[in-house]
Amino acid sequence: MIKNRVRELREALGLSQRELGKLTGNNNITISRIENGKLKLNFATMEKFAKALKCEPWELIVSRQQIYPLNHQRIIAAYLALDDEDRRFFDKILFGEKKAQDPDHPLAPSQIPVAGAKL
Image (cartoon, rainbow, N blue to C red; front, top):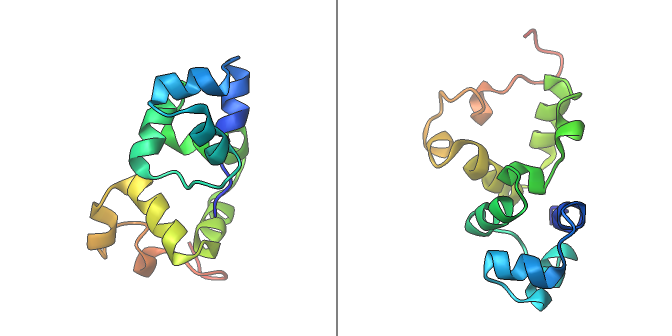
């Protein structure tokens, strides 16, 4: 399961779990379970939480400070290290359904450079 940043973002905004619950249509028990990784965030839930937490959906998983300094090879390596379920999850967030259906998409498995290959 992918660790999320819901608690960190909620606390940065000074929101209680109950307040975040009201903004997202959840109760504080559900918020607690999401923050503790006991409930997985799906795409629809991520969109609601991102709106409430004033961020992009992907920022529920990784901060801007973490992603921007990374070079492309490290990002690709991290992506390739994901299990199939998590990779499909990220594909949907980043590219919608098109990537899974388009083998010529720049991040389709056939298009991702392997280690040692010339870029």
